[in-house]
Length: 182
Image (cartoon, rainbow, N blue to C red; front, side, top):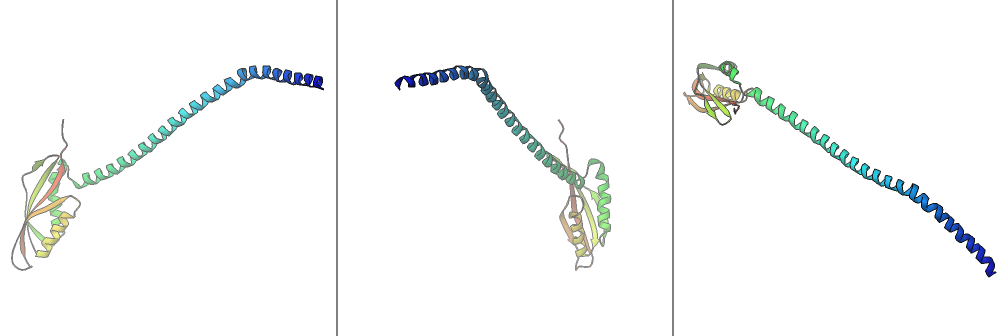
């Protein structure tokens, strides 16, 4: 029996050796290069995925910047509409006269005062002298300050007795942006 194990064992050993001799070259010729290709492709895929994430972030940032820019353009347009340009300054007197006409007061006098330059803007002051009822003078001031243009009223002086006829003198100012040069 010991002799019969030996040829079987020898056959198994030869079979294993034969399989090893065949599988080792197959491993080195087929599997190992494919494994390296898979590893290389995996690294390339990771790099492409990283680039894709970066590109998606750039797109999100670009879209965010477009939304912010659009919002800022809307705000700028709002302010440009409410602040006069150099060309529209002569029309400001007419605009003030139109506001006065819409109320129950009488314009006695309107004068443009000395312009005042500040850092980045110019103050355009006017002085109005109005006759009307006390409450009507208050309504006029309200209309001026809540009008289409940014205007402020200050240095208010009202002379008269009672609520019937008053003489009001006050300064009305609007502002305009002055672009810096250089």
